[in-house]
Amino acid sequence: MTGSSPNGQGAAPVAKVEVARPLPRSLRLAAEPYTYVTEAEVHAALVRDPRSYIDHLEHTLTGLMDKSCSMELPPKQVFDDGPGKGDFRVMPCIVRGASVLKTVKVIGTNRRQRLVPEQITVGKLLVLDPIENFITHVFEACLLSSARTGACAAVAIRKLQPARERVVIVGAGRVGFYAGLFANSLGGVNEIICCDRVRARSEQVAGDLAPMVSARVRAADYREIEAANVLVLATDAEVPVYHRRDFWADLVVSLGADTDSQSEIDLDPSEHPRVYVDHPHSASCGDLKRWLAAGYLQATDIHSFFDMMNQDVSGGDRPKVFISTGSALFDNMTVSYYLANQVVHRRGAVF
Image 1 (spheres, helix red, strand yellow):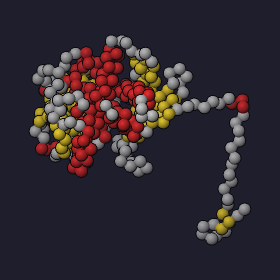
Image 2: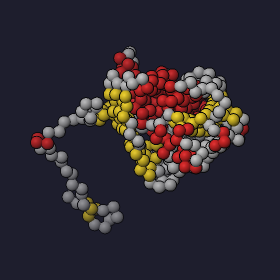
Image 3: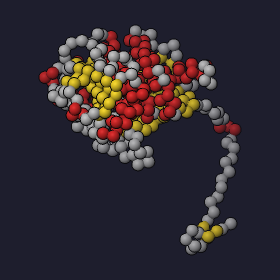
Image 4: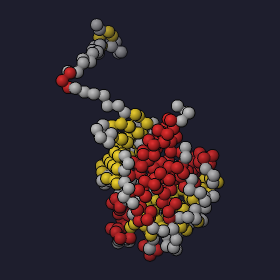
């Protein structure tokens, strides 16, 4: 069968339709059942009871400290496309306790944003069957990554800064939104101030947060800020956006300097800040890597999340800095919370 081509210059071939043939029985393939979890489902589960989510993270961290559970957490592998071009990352983690949860996240940093606009984090998180190792769940990973980063910040704020009346968030994106939401769930937050170089973005985040939190929320120009109990930096900046001379903050939380090309804090080593990290791997990139190379800090000056959890570190006059560059452990704990609460939710009257 033939037909005319679109430009009228002769016949156009007709594509052949291939009929799939049954596979040979000797291949012996079986179906691998899995559940697909959307961004909306992740978001709904994590914001339904923010305090419960933060408590779950702390409970798991406590279990890891007292050895009631254990983890395997290899360093994440980062494959960089070059300065300003993005990267992709492979982030595995296994937590073994009363049950075993195996996760691996494969995500990309999407700086071009041509096919997937306005989304810098792209990719999926996979859950593996603890015995047979097939994939049981596929999670869309953008909001999961943003939420677990905001939740990680909230756990640090709870441990490091009991006075948290004023929380300033610089970077009005997904991470900033979740950082404000989860910080508010800790209690004691009277005001959340959102800042961004694009005013419309800070106003959007402030407007979206306001009905979800008990604190007053407003957008402001960064230059208007005079002091903060907690300053959260959630940017993609390549030069520092904060120096102590800008204004005083009792606790500075940096969430965006997770590659060698990014930076958020201009450190004054004479202040001898107390520095805490989500995992020692955080010293291998970003601001911490530069500070160590310059001799501003020694490796012994950097304290892990477990040091923070195990000690009373909330007092003292020295400034405190918490840096997270993204931990597969927090991915794993977030998925654990999601799966546990989906089971409970499905047993209720909703389904």
